[in-house]
Length: 94
Image 1 (cartoon, rainbow, N blue to C red):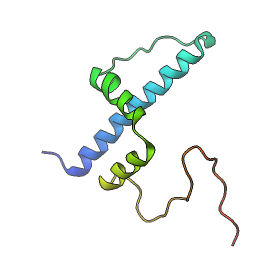
Image 2: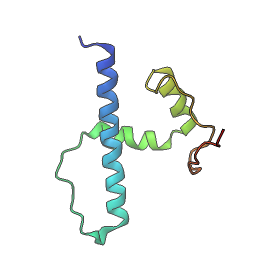
Image 3: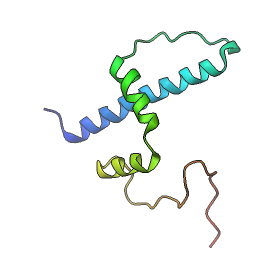
């Protein structure tokens, strides 16, 4: 049996991989004349056909709560008070 941290790391790596692939596919669909080719990799049906579409429909607030509850967030800092979609601005000078 592997350590709990290893399971979290593998889950995160897998989710990042399939979400990145989905983003590439969306860009390829949006810009078909950019010379892109179909992917040369195999995709797992669960991750590409179930997880990615469900993840895309979950609100950001729910995703944040799940990530925080599962310990998949950074510790020791406070995130800036802003909503997703708002541009980043540097902190105010002290």
